[in-house]
Length: 356
Ligand code: ADE
Ligand code: ZN
Image 1 (cartoon, rainbow, N blue to C red):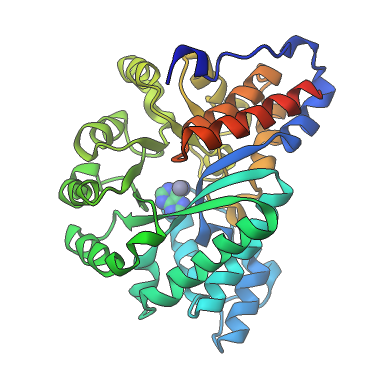
Image 2: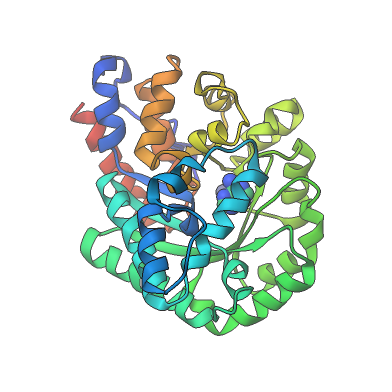
């Protein structure tokens, strides 16, 4: 990337955009979503519908009772309910319906590109084969492109609370479907599961030409971000908000333009920050980091990507039109798409801001 291409470079007069137009602009601007767990988009209504279709009973009497259980103290308390919810996914049509429901929401939020996580071990552990899972997701991605013009790619995540051996077995099982995903990630409980545990798996994925990302610095310390970079050699950090505890790390991330896929409503619901007004998104941007805004698990955290943008900007008065534009421009820069597509979306972004 040349200096001319850097997202910070634009001729837009941000000061001329009044604050009352910001929320509409945040919704209308084109954006890429780079941190979305497809299993985390499973709304309670769809969980009940799929349970009924598959003849499964749920330990909740109603959609309302299930939704009422979404009160989390931390990451683990969320993961317990999230893995249980994914238990209704058995057949190709279930995976398709889940992903299609997400794409309908994403299209309404003006998402033009999505790089979507899926957690195969959550399903293979229950005896669901790879084929229906990946075929159902792939089918939804293709239809999203055909109907909404959204370009969508899949990223396969390894569950870090499971063993290296399990991750290698998952990688092996995924290889017949290698052309259907562009990269691998690392998710699930961060504490006590440092990136080093998966050094050899990621090295193999790198040899296979896969893109590499990892959750780090959500609940885990800045040292986990450093080892995701140095040991796993990732190209993006998912969350990464705890980097601010290490000024040297912040400097390193800024200088290298290492993207952080930040998820404000997730951080609020999992108590990484007490309130949205305490969130450090503004500080990350001020430090020159390539931060982006994403929804993580929108069905569980109370909002999709536009809700994340609008609520966070409402809570942080220092965020205005310049930061809105920068976050969208960063999302294209941080994506794994070619320069031509990135430039096309940048032009659409500038046009949205020029129209005010
Ligand atoms: N899996 C789904 N959402 C996650 C998150 N926020 N952190 C770690 N693993 C996850
Ligand atoms: Zn996540």
